[in-house]
Amino acid sequence: SYCDDPDLVLDLKNLIVLFADTLQGYGFPVSQLFDMLLEMREQYGEILLKRWNITFRQILDQDNYSPIPVSTEQEYRQYTSQFPLQDPELEKLSYPKKLPFSEFVPKAYCQLKEFIYACLKYSEDLHL
Image (cartoon, rainbow, N blue to C red; front, side, top):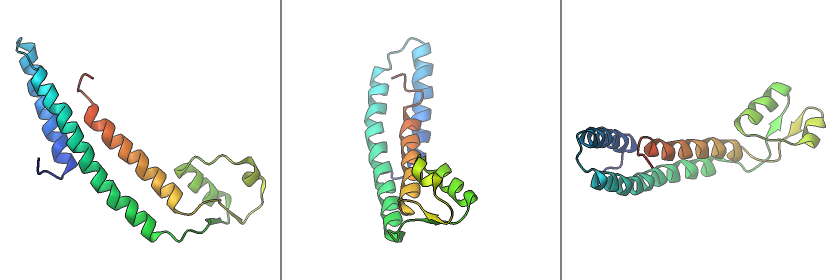
């Protein structure tokens, strides 16, 4: 309950799942182990929220809140690969142009994807 390392919680979860699957293979009841794993998932979520709270705060603190200037097609593609921007009007404009958002948007988008992936990582092999 005092653990604040999500990787350690994932390792522990994987060991418990292996143990539960082995016990289940021998015919033992394992529902209580899986109930415990569901409780651990809530704690894991709390750990992730604390970690990403710090990350998002850093992104916000470092942002200058001004539109991103792009001067080449390569720069434009770099930003649109990080954040799926689809704006036909913006694409028609000549270079240099400004994206309608600051650095916060692609950075937050990437971190949000990482957060979702980390949440889903715990649910693997839980037989939900």
